[in-house]
Image (cartoon, rainbow, N blue to C red):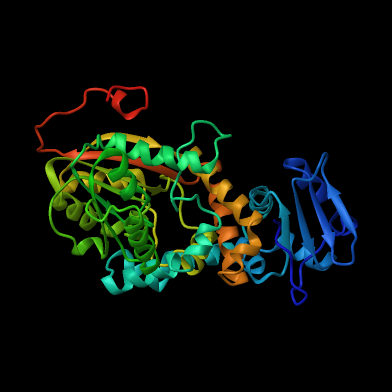
Length: 417
């Protein structure tokens, strides 16, 4: 379902005679698009059926939207100053590709690098970590349920093909992780940052593991505890409202899925040392998370995410991750980049947010809804264009001398089991 402005909102607009040849050149670079003014006038730019439509106030506002910096445009969208119907990812691509680097973008990039919150890259208390996590994840379980799959999996799915539905692709991801970890019955399995508990439950139900998970989100912990009780798995699955740094004990297999992005580049060594201390000598650890290519730096998108979506979040490069994991004592067994899968995943979430707009708005305010729409559309574009990656890295303690699989066959459905 497309987003529609309220009567109090003041969208932007467009007139081809005012922006003329430059707009014609822009439309030739990508998909055709439409601009609709509040008075009912509309203009189509490019050839073919428009992929997306800008709903704007008038010509002056449309001209401003075309020329303003990316951070300003994002803020205007969240406020409801204009709307977009259709393919939101294509619309975000249009704005990003056709906006020259402006002073506002440079200032936003600098602000992202020197923001006071960046001190968390060096040091973060458990209280601050909990606040950051709850800012993002404790919006509403029903809101997340409006666009996630039925298991409430909020991380990159694993698609057999681009047409596969999100439900099956997320189940495929859970299996992919459990197979990579070579998970066996009665093994002690830990999920760091376990979300709403889907992987914990899947590991117990299908693979017979004894699962423990931790999260700092009160909403996630309550949801997972209720789901565990409903499935009569209390004897096999434990959910803790806890910082991972407070965990103790030893586990045969450990997974961290979509969590270490909250750690910060300069605290990766502490993170990997803690995981190392929790893993049995012959165990396996799978780290699944978003990473940044080597030559990609902070930009206006970074500042937007820091302020509106993931306070305290920070992306490392694969080289950062592997170096700090190695210093903690791990050796890397396997690395897989699931970047195309995350692009598809984010697109599915955007489509479901648009389709279920009315349901979403019953549980969060309009600004939150529009923030999530824009952040997920921008994420889809980032993964599709190669400015962000998603890597699964399988590791073991280097001193381990037990049985090791000699091939990757066991990781796949038709391999050896």
